[in-house]
Image 1 (tube, helix red, strand yellow):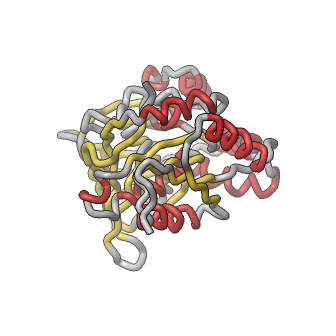
Image 2 (image 1 turned 90 degrees about the vertical axis):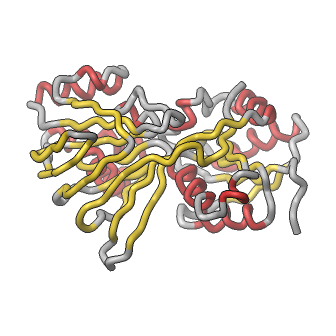
Length: 311
């Protein structure tokens, strides 16, 4: 049975860490109840359950779906929405209460994980903006043609390797932050480069590349000028720097000046053709995906998702 059009469907994606997931939700639910927001909440058990629960909310008729989670959970949500007919998608607005590791896309819109009340106040205004999505179109190991949408960015090469290494070290250290720092430290002394052939606009790049970021959003600092509403993708191609330059690059990344590094080559385009990127892993919105087989294409689709933005 369809629910009231004003009722929110909330998907709570707990994150592992020092903060109790139960206490975190209690803070959020209290702020919602004080403001008399009508909502139904479901909690994801695993990352794999997010898509199933989003599909359930869509089929039950929720017109406002709010993700309490990070970039990966948002990624699952938009991919579910893009499976629907345009007429269904047009009636649904997607919102976020940041609760992930990076929250990069939420941070772009000035949603702050520590300002729950402000975030809910903004969501209640129901200010909608149509946003772009990037899309990677590829062939998998079974020969099937596949595609996956992204809100923030795709990483190819070393940054995706850091994601994979972080996942492995997390099993040893438990802490996400400690595993990320350890992974980055290891990569500084295990600098990888990958033979790639890329076509970006009229340029053909055929050489060894350390990492590449394609951003519809800020790309964790690697595509800082990208915005998800101009119909374009920002691309940062990083050639192999020396150790001192690599450390400098990390500093510029942290301080928001990544594009100033001499080894970073920025582009703006609507489409990138990757002829090959040998042995390079691919990460999409902070989550490692299976490496595509053969060539693949990344493009942008304009104004396809209704997103709730601040006042």
